Image 1 (cartoon, one colour):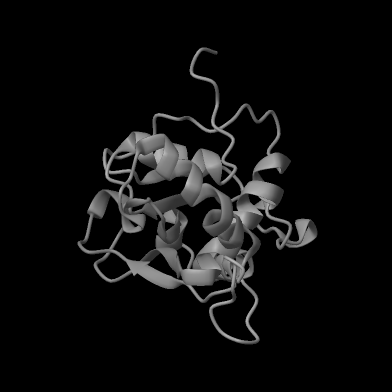
Image 2: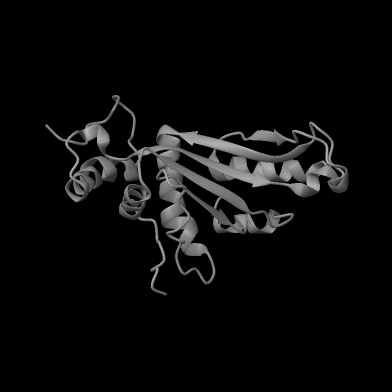
Length: 194
């Protein structure tokens, strides 16, 4: 009997999820001395968020952000609306100011695989992600300055450069557990000594 049996007949498991189940859970159990397999940290969801401040003046900007997020994640984003009016920003309550997507399950695993293997290596002058951006509970948030690092975005059709915030939510209890999980999944953390 193999340890990487498919969840359902006919479905293909994401590559990173197979690696997690076959190798990473064993390595993390040995490293942290877990007694129960449910104590091993895992991936809960990935939230991809973009803010579009110019949408208050130009309503077409939000359409471009939605199109980019849909191409990158393969899922239709939720439009973020302003909660209160702020006169200095010419902002009214209910105006669209951004968009976000929550990826769970296999879509989250596939997005993480594409992020680690394809998108992050395409960043110019990339020296690794900061290992200090954990929130104290094993969740990791980082930002990308432009959408062109994703190969799903056509370089010729970029109307303006958009940045994204990506939050990876894990079941890790501490930052050290979350860091060990993401490092095992292939996240290129920068060496803190540099």
